Length: 554
Image 1 (cartoon, rainbow, N blue to C red):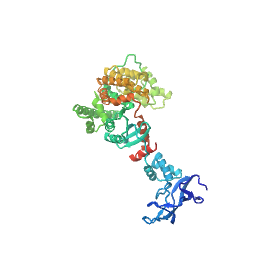
Image 2 (cartoon, helix red, strand yellow; image 1 turned 45 degrees about the horizontal axis):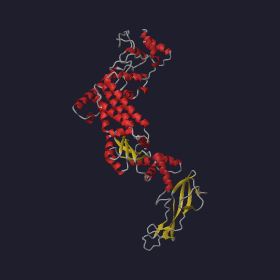
Image 3 (cartoon, rainbow, N blue to C red; image 1 turned 135 degrees about the vertical axis):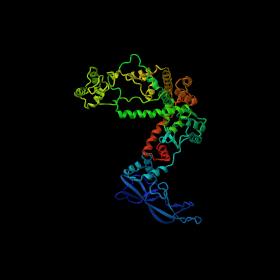
Image 4 (cartoon, helix red, strand yellow; image 1 turned 90 degrees about the vertical axis):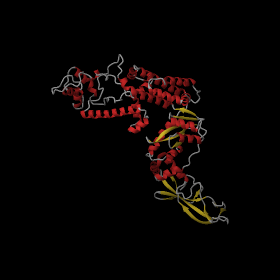
């Protein structure tokens, strides 16, 4: 049987032996003499022979083993402490190894892509079997590549264990490759890495103060560039924080003249049971007490983080309560999908005509294709009843239609959704969304916040569109952001003023974000890949294995 590929430093002794589950290739070493590893003297005097049986790359669809005849020589140097030595095929095989170097490299490459358990399953189908522990051991033994010194890097944090422990990823922006993974996201760790790579000239980062301090300490000569996506996200978060406090005031604003009524439909969920209403009232009382306590502590000068730890609340909740002018109660639940929805317009019209017999209405819509029971029809009619029923039950509402209830014709979206509408330009809003924004702009502070948010969004997005590597710095953009900060710091919304103060403290990186083409987008993309690899390892991979799989796979 002919061998379809060469075996380094060896020649086939005779025909290949075929067994049930593998092939055996007998080979001999090509060298006529052997060199003593201790003194380096050559010798032809053979002491004895023995065989080694390492696994090799498969031939066709069969596992392959080599039967290497190894000679042991006498060392003829009288001053050498060795009396005998064995010849060693160094390119093919490591000392005491049970697999050839090329087989180990192939198994390690599979492990880089598939991980330990996945790699072991795939290697079994490729006739190169190895246990998952062996696959991981081969990956960890692979040498790290020699990479050129980075000049422009992007840094960002990633969750080793979400909510508990975070690390830092470092990406070479020129080569678009991961350079390193750091065990935490503190300033000393980042500064130490930058000190070891003194050639870094630019650092793209998010708005983290730790990364800003670490870059200033480790590479004071490097230019720092804030990420444009994070700037847009920060302005939206600032608007949302302000809305949490002002939402109750904005909900009381009247509808604009000319607003058209919505077609008949369910604008809210069906009435809840007495037990559910009591549970909701008790929950509201508990959160109201927490809100009062947070306001009291904040007015007394306690930091938000200390309040969160003392009361066992999330920091975002404490921040929202501290900035809210009134208790931020939950908005009424919207109407979920129901079998009754296609027939709401018909039912509302029949009730306006004076028919309030729920069973009669149910029979009518059942003939139209309604597949449900009469229970939902009874609940729908009970909320719109204008005269008492025979049982003497009192009417729940004096109006005949939900469309006439105050506040249900054009409800205000939640703070998070409303913040998205405020930061978007008018050209990207539909008619209903534009009407919502126009409604809240009746408030002077809301009008100022909307103008500032949209102006900032336009500045950042325009800078991102026109920037290329060959572009010259845009001085107009730097002047515009300075003017925006000056105006925003005098805004009546505390969250916007605080955001502007933060930009002013990081003004060099913010200006670079508007005038330089670089960003940490490469780091964000590599983090997505890192998350996939981490989950592929079931979250149990250590930092060294993750680093090797990220760096070596590239």
